[in-house]
Image (cartoon, rainbow, N blue to C red; front, side):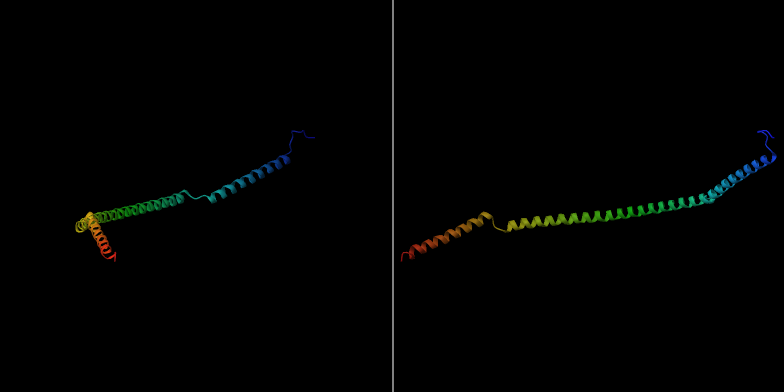
Length: 143
C-alpha cells in the first residue's frame, strides 16, 4: 500500500488538470472583464480631439458673448447721449415756460386793480345803495 504522502501520477495529473482549468477559467473571466472595460473606453486621441472642439466652441461662445456685451454697451452709451441731450433741451424749455408763467403772472397782477381798491369801491357802492334805500323809505315810506 502507498503511504499517505505518496501520490500517484494519475492523481497528480488530475490535480494539475483541475488547477489548469481553474487558472484558464480565471484568465478567461479576467480577459472578458478587460475586453468589456476596453469596449467602454475612448482612445485618448479621440477624447483629446473632442475636448479641443468643446474648448473651441466655448471660446467662440465667450467671444460672441463679449462682442454682444460691447454692442449693448455702445448702444447704451449712444442712447444715454441722446437722452442727456433731450434732457438738456427739456430743461431749457421748462426754464422758458417758467419765465413765461412768471412774466404772465406779473403782467396779470399789474393789469388788475389792487385788492384793497376793489373792496373799497364795492363797500362805497353798497353804502350808497343803502343810503338811497333809506332815503327813499324815509321820504316816501311815511305815506
